[in-house]
Length: 125
Image 1 (cartoon, rainbow, N blue to C red):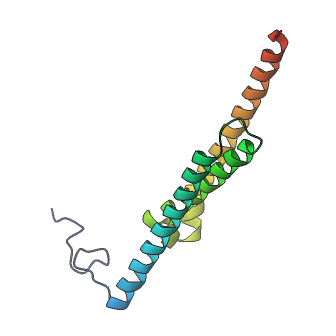
Image 2 (cartoon, rainbow, N blue to C red; image 1 turned 90 degrees about the horizontal axis):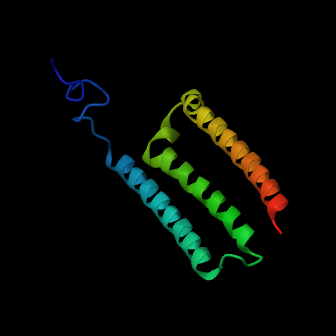
Image 3 (cartoon, rainbow, N blue to C red; image 1 turned 120 degrees about the vertical axis):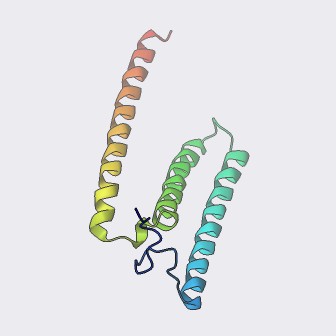
């Protein structure tokens, strides 16, 4: 049986090449996303180092961590996992279940934390 990644006439073949201009644009895109992800990570680390837990700014820092992590996840999935190059319908088929699951997890987490907080306040002296 012949391997399908070695077929010469296939568009996904190992022998498939691209022009130099296409290679330059691909490398620019990868470098741009890598620099963006590095900058976001540096900002996250800086916030974590310089703003301590328990300060009045800590809730803002926590929410900024969540937002920046979601931005990084989007770029990783879109560029490095090539989901950004797919058709819109395939992107939705892949991403919508994950978004619904994350919303469900947030609902469960918030609901349970409110319940635990109510119980904690009842027994607190």
